[in-house]
Image (tube, rainbow, N blue to C red):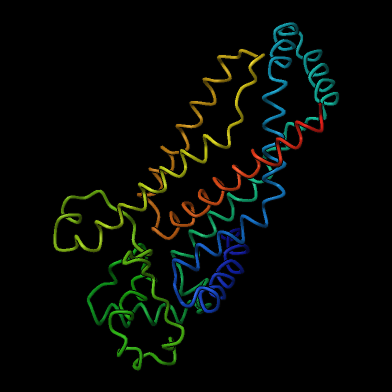
Length: 295
């Protein structure tokens, strides 16, 4: 995991700072505030990405015309495409940068949430192993989480008095409560009848709200992020591609929501909600202003 260590450690420390200050030791609120900060930092790149996507939509008929006319001459086709891009001041790679930045952050956040002792509390491997050993001896196994580190935090949140026995490893003021609105964000949502309607129903049934919200916000965000096809282009193929992409995003979100801790999905929900309002602003002010200036 070496590469993500480089990103996960500062992200974990920043998340812990937010948790202890403006989030008032509320883990879910800390993730939401963390998300807003990340999205604000990426906002200039996101606006550039959307403009690039809109420009691509605009010149798509011209691109297809060149591809049709020079389909048997790849070299000439590439020359004409480069000339077209230069004339319209379009960079084919311009829309990729925000995604290239956001994906490592998302993957790193998985490790931050899955290994809170290491990345948030900055514990050494030796300290982590001793804490896991203590909890294992106490309960037989580390449970109630997507990782043993989350299991340790869950155990001590439920047995705070036991912290006195490991005060050299974990202090009461360091303890992180992973619950948000009654949902344990360290757990992975499960579509399991025994969990949803059994003894642990109160724990796992509320978790289903996380995948549902993640999928719904992803769909709405995807639809808003996709520029409408130009009326003069009449490009059915482009429209079909847009609709397909709008469905792939929610389906992938649904899949990952049942594979990752709920805290990661909460980040995704908060990110989508921010993006929805951000896109409404871009559509209303940024793009309309650009259209007026071009007339």
